[in-house]
Length: 351
Image (cartoon, rainbow, N blue to C red):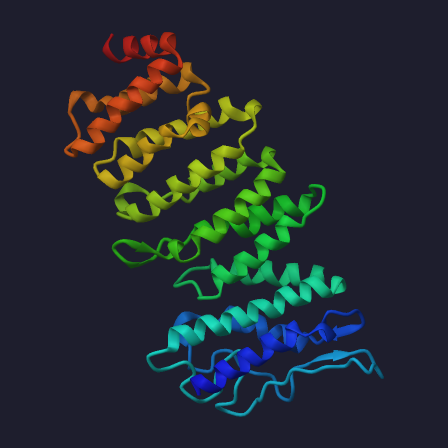
């Protein structure tokens, strides 16, 4: 059955590559799109369980009435038949090569959505709505479906084609992308659920915020609300978010530097002073980025006293030697950035 499903995916991908499909006047049925999206949203533990039910009858891409260019892609609705959803009653993508078959299937479903978005302008608004709703369901909790990352890559391609900023783009950021930071689950001690799709999520965030950097302060504020608390013991997610924070600071507008500096100072203090060496090292490494350092120390009079107090740790060195070395380097960078503010912060700390 895995071989049959793989063959069906390769057939669908091949058909979409034919020049006959790259023409106008081709109608895409809602059932076809429903099938592709149901597969992208299928939970990881549902592979082979028939979670993505195939609609009765053929699923087709059909040309306009009477068109000689009409083409169709059919998926059997019989149990065990090939299609994006695997067998209705069979084992689906079982066996040793199940992961490879799953990746191929998800890739094909993604190609379907990309093809429709590219060649069917009338479907774009509906597709954007489907993508947003699907991602919202994926962020609702539990193990994210394997299709989350592919769907985010599609969304990033859509964002890259945005024109002038609109209120809908702000809604996309706050209602879809930022809630995807919410999952706090873990596969194991070092693999948070967020890591399964974090890279394409950050890429989509950057594309949107580069086009509208004025949204960055509100985006960072929303991220802080979803930041793991130390008592949760989710240091791996903290490290991921610190990495994302460094990337996002690259798009900050100069006018917002001071505001962002004060917004992030409490979090940065907590992370840099963490007993977890991975969290502390990642927080301290933000200062090695010139772009991030420029933002984090923009309000030196307000942020430096808090940072210095956290870095000095009440005179007690960190148990990790690397953290102590990095702390020393950050203090030197702070002094080089604004010696007067550094002296004032030292006076505040030591009286």
